Length: 234
Length: 405
Image: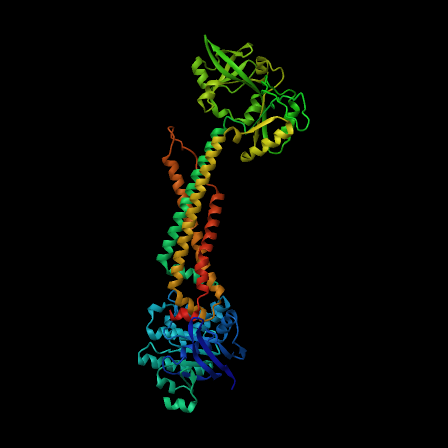
């Protein structure tokens, strides 16, 4: 199976100049298979957020190469990275981060509007279908404040899927929800992964959730542990 | 609807309180500018109109006669001579018809009239008043200086042996239309004329001294034969009169005075009034710009996280820039719309309050479409410019930092 994302020798250093130089990632090699469902785990301060930002093309690594859907993504300028994000990536944040001024459906369509500049009837149709798929058909025209936490996160998930991304990055997607809602949302992610066929990378603290993924990456002190060692840690 | 329009509009609508604040600021600012401009323009137009109602825009007079040096000194030798300026004898323009044709051929000249004027005395029943005798062709003269609105009694006509006199002179000498009046020139010539009408020239001094009479009568009385003393000119470019005077002077060899040169103090007063109103407008514009910028900066800071999310999902930086620029532009334009309404309302309200004794407005305010269009355009551009700094700030936000907050 082809890999949607390939990282080779990724290093990230911060500081320099007056402040001390700190290396957060010490040479990460990583491959995310097409259609996979992977978990990224590790203690706080292990560099998870930095790695996720680099994979999400929100940050450029100090060293190393990065390919997204076969395209060279490292060393590109902001304009190119922005376009790549819009075309190939979907983001789900811990706090849903919906835009309060827009309805659920408008929030879902925002990545289309942001990338293409306008919305077609087909896009609208897809947004409605996806909202119906996650049980929010009735709530399409409500504002985020009128929705519960679980509903808000489901809108955010649909928003991440609207552009048919190749890879969805989820940062603690259930971290802000009660355990029952968290289970429901996680199950939904799994189902969508099977139905829509895009690859998922989920950052989580919850070992039980991580265990239920196809593949786990364990990050410690800026290094990925080999699979055998990672299993022990869990 | 495009991304920029949709998001800009929604953010303005969502931040109702901020939008109302900033719109209020722009409205008041534009209102003040429109009001001041309308009042000042109206006032100035009125002052100029009143001043020029009895004056020509350019007056041509005979050139001064100069002494001619009898000796020319060789190089290095300074002639010692005490030369006084020559007394100007009755200085008239002879053979003026070709000059008048030349003046009328100038494209900026809309009307012209000749005049033969000189000092004189008006007598009636033993009372003698010193007057200005002004010989004119009535029809020509009226194309340069309006008289119909100055008529107080009698008929506006000037047949041979008739005269039009100022209302003060008429009162002093107890004259009314139909009365006879004896006029005497400085050289002692006398003529008896019939008063055809009394006129109010707008200034007491003119009303006391001016006597308008047919050109031929004046020429005979003053002893000018067929000569004249002045040519009055009217132009369609009021504020170019100075230039016109220079050109006419050069082409005719006569001395030419523009209305600006004859009313130096007035022109200075108008200029300083214009300068101070311009200053007020500039400062108000700055205040409005600062208001827009500060509210938008706050808006950018408040929406930092949302901007970060938009950037993360692949919104190009230029679209974010456009969202905030457009907000500035919309606020400027809508505020200009409200503001011109407010300013026009204030100016019209002012004309209701400031009235002359006879109930008419003190002066008409000038509310033309040019003022509205230029104000709206300036407000739109000022809106865009003041939004530039906040918009750049928004566009340069690092998505990672912005989402973390």
